[in-house]
Length: 266
Image 1 (cartoon, rainbow, N blue to C red):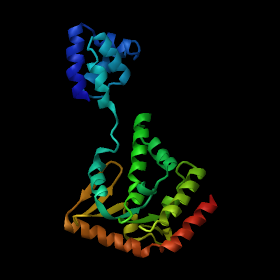
Image 2 (image 1 turned 90 degrees about the vertical axis):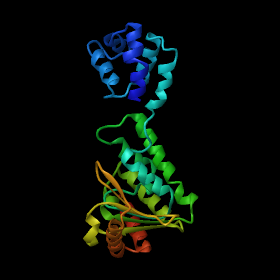
Image 3 (image 1 turned 60 degrees about the horizontal axis):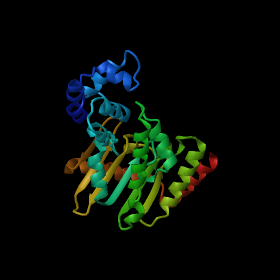
Image 4 (image 1 turned 30 degrees about the horizontal axis):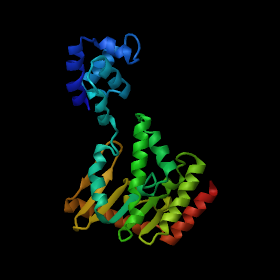
């Protein structure tokens, strides 16, 4: 967007119309004394222009709708850049095995739970981005029922079940949703109790994928990083770690009873 805005307005359209940065910023409502730095920041690509700014600039610079049309570039990305490659592999998967240590896996989150997580992101996200990401997360979940021949296996560390994201009511709904998802014939949900949480279970989340072309991937994500691995040695290490975690986890029947008990305690 910054490139589009730079090409169409500030240094060209604005200068051609003889309008100063201060005048444009003030007319857009940025307040006396702040307009110059705000417009400068947008022109230099350090921040995205707002829809309001594009509308004002279009009128003041007589851009005849070119700047207003550029607002399409302001739409937020559905997913952070580091996860898009993983999203592509997930869409092509015929088998997916997910271990999550602190949160409910994204494919199993309720709308309220996802909104509580994304809405409390820091640095804060604007409301439009929150809405887009929540909607995208829910859209991803459709593959659980749309592709019944794909195997989904989830192991969730007990801490994720007891962390009250969004409050008691949100968590109670989330736990019941886990029970419902676990009843699907292509989905298994297991719990790794804290008393068994040793070995690879404390090293963080991971996802193992197999595609229809029999390509194998492992995905690991941290607070600011995410990596999709295809190297056989890396895949082997993740597979061994995940195998140990599944071996220590409760069976699906025991897990359902465990989840139900946690929900009753809320």
